[in-house]
Image (cartoon, rainbow, N blue to C red):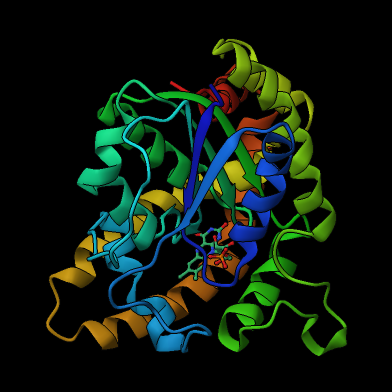
Length: 299
Ligand SMILES: Cc1cc2nc3c(=O)[nH]c(=O)nc-3n(C[C@H](O)[C@H](O)[C@H](O)COP(=O)(O)O)c2cc1C
């Protein structure tokens, strides 16, 4: 009997849908039944975003508050593999994806099922992945692979271009000077190679070694500086989120957070990286290796 795969994801711009299409293409070509489900919120966010709308989701994202999903249906009760596509929002799983992971219909099919996570982020997906991993393990599913696609341009460049994309809705070059935002077309097309690696594991239901194969093919690339920024920023975002939800004038505080983020990004982050380079980077190779393994690890 043909293997059954569910690929379920949320996407605003269509980027993650494209990624999932390329990733699953080799499975479909091999005759595997792939059910693709694109979910939405009952009350979806407008895309493109307004600046205020964009920042307004920060507290609920960081605190993992779910929202109501629009009705979706799954054809099967049992799948041989579930592919979960998600994006990072404010260093956390996006609200629609976080809501999906808490949805009883998905939780019911995840138990004892092999799961592969695939993300299309700007470049800061590590904290979100740690949260997603914990939620997947809590359902009783077996995480067997992780793929993280990012914008590979320098951090300040992708910071500017993603805002242009999110606030104007088009994945195009800002001012015709900046590079295109988001995951490159080349990297999106390359995800079909990851699908090819998955195929024999799916057919044999033997999942050992898949993640190592995916990493060799470039499915996860860790950047030391981004890792350092994220580990500091994750704690700071948690502080801000907890602080802002308790305030009556949320909108005003979200504006303060917006300016804080700009200062932290363009001034704070370079300072943190300089301090790290002088005092820690050269002297703690073991700490760095352990940190990298923590993020590569599926447990
Ligand atoms: C509200 C919001 C916050 C975001 N925060 C992050 C982030 O913390 N880290 C990151 O790498 N990308 C971040 N992104 C980019 C998304 O992860 C994603 O790449 C982009 O929204 C395109 O995804 P799509 O397929 O849903 O259109 C953010 C996007 C939005 C809309």
